[in-house]
Length: 197
View 1 (tube, rainbow, N blue to C red):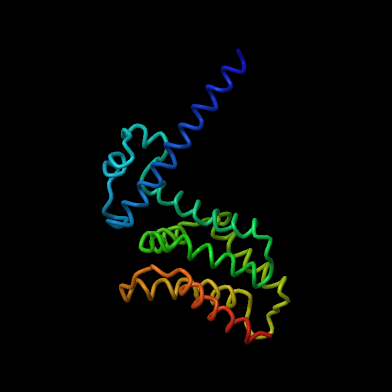
View 2: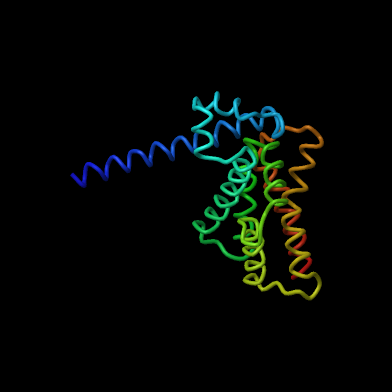
C-alpha cells in the first residue's frame, strides 16, 4: 500500500514539475517574441495550456515568474561551472560560455531578465553567488589587487559579456554564432587578465 501511495506522490510531483517547466518555457518564448511588458498571464496560460488557477499555484505573479527564470538561468550557469571542474581563468571562461549559450536562443529575454534579476537581487541571490565565484577564481588564478581592485576586475569581466551582448542588440544583429560571441568575450577577458600578469 505504501509503495502505491509513494508512486502516486512521485507521479504527482513529476506532473507538477513538468507543468512548472512548461510554464517557464512557454513564458520565455513569449517574452522573447513580445517583450517582458507585453505578455499577459492569459498569453502564458494559453501557450502552456493551463488555467489561471494553475498558473497562480506555481507563481504569485508574472514578476515572480520572471525572477525565477532569471534565478534558474544563473543557477544553471553556476551548475555548469561546478560540473566542469575548471578553475581560475578557465573556470571564469566556463561561466562566460554558459552565459552565451543560454543567451543565444533568447537574446532579448536574456538581456531583460538578467537586468531585472540584478536590479531585484538580494544579498543572498544567485547573482551575488556569480560575483563571488568570479572573485574566488581571480584569487585562485593568483591575480592580486596591485593594479585593479577585485571589484574593478569583476566589473570588467562581467562587462565583457554584457558589452558584447548589448552591442549586438543595439546593432540589431542576429545571435546565430555563439562561437564568435565567445571569442569576443575571451579576447576582452584575456586583455584584462593579460594586463595583470
